[in-house]
Every structure is written in structure tokens, then in C-alpha cells.
Length: 245
Image 1 (cartoon, rainbow, N blue to C red):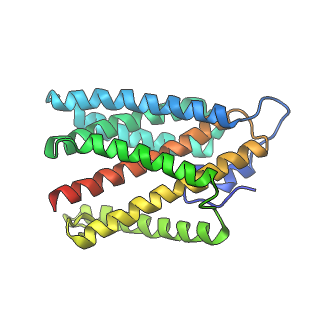
Image 2: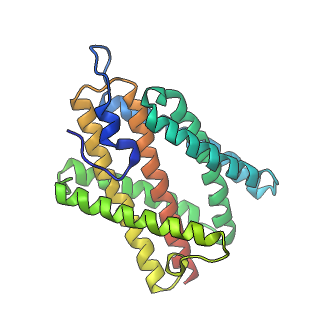
């Protein structure tokens, strides 16, 4: 049985609609390899826009905006058509890389060294959460899952309000504040993003146990990348607040 999760890629509706067969099935190793592949694609695309940004290339912003729009579209396509994930997840990774490279360059120009620290912290948090999950120190119990999903829902609502207010030249103050409250909010969001890995790992493990089709390796890798990208951006935001405080 799959755990309820705040990551839309690991929705029980997706796994519940799978057609199981006697062909090749997903494995932990296969999923890990696919995740590394998508991570490499994100990195290469990010380096491209990173270099363009530091070279003053005017195409950076259009590439970022285009990457955000196309990436969002293909994330939904992947979620609703998981059997297409081998292609759609790679397109998503390219788009995310274009966005991350540009965003990272902007932060780096303002606060030198921040991107390296954010990358290292993101990698560190990922492996810490993997260790905590493997050692069963943190387990995805029903209460844990419900609490995490509630927190995710609250964060999503705040972000949505902030986006809407942005159209009118305003924002949710505490979300962008570099004061104690703003830093505390960002830290909480980082923790929520990190804890989301626990549910992601559990759902990958359950998918393997259920004998999900091999293409789900790409799909699950895509889901992990969604959480990883979100965590990196939140850590980047938190570090920027700490450096500007």
C-alpha cells in the first residue's frame, strides 16, 4: 500500500491505476540510476544558463521563463501519463535546469559562494534523510503523513497568496523577510521539504514491492527530483536571508 504523500508525483491515484504485468518491473537500483540521470541532465542545463547569466547574455530570462512554463506543463503530463515518463521526465529535467541555473546565478551575483553552500547542504540533507529512513529512525506513520501533508497544504496556500499579491505589487511580508520571523518560516519550510523525502522513499520501496512496471523507475526518479529541486530552492532562499540579515 502506498503512503499518502504531499508530492503529487507519488499520489496513490497514480500507483493505483497501474497495469501490472509479468514483464520487467521497477527496482531500487534502476530507480536510483534514473534519478542520477535526471540529476545530470538538470546539472548540464543549469550550467548552460549559469554561464550565460555571467556572460550577460540577454537570453537567460526568456530561457528561465520558458523553462518554468514548459517544465510545469511536462510535470503535469508526467503525473497524468506516467508511462511516458522516460521522455517527459527528461524534458522536465532540462527545463528545471534552465530555471535553476538562472536563479542560482542571480543569487550568486548578489552573495558570492551561496550556491556552493546550498548545493552541499541539499546533498547533505538528502543523504541524512535517506539514512534516517533506512535506519527506521523516522517512519512514515499515519500521524506523520497527515501532519506533513497538512504542512504542505499550508505552505502551498501561502505561496499561492504571495503569487496573487505579486500581480498587484505586493507580497506576503513574512515570507520574504530577513528578520527572525522570516528566517524561522524559511527554516520550517526547509524541514518540511526534507521530511517529504521520507514519504518519497517509502513509495519507491512500495512500488518495487508491488512489482510496478519498469517505466515507473523514470516516474519515481521524476518524483524525487521534484522534492530535491524544491529543497534546493528553499535552502538557497534561507541562506540568502541569513547572509542579508
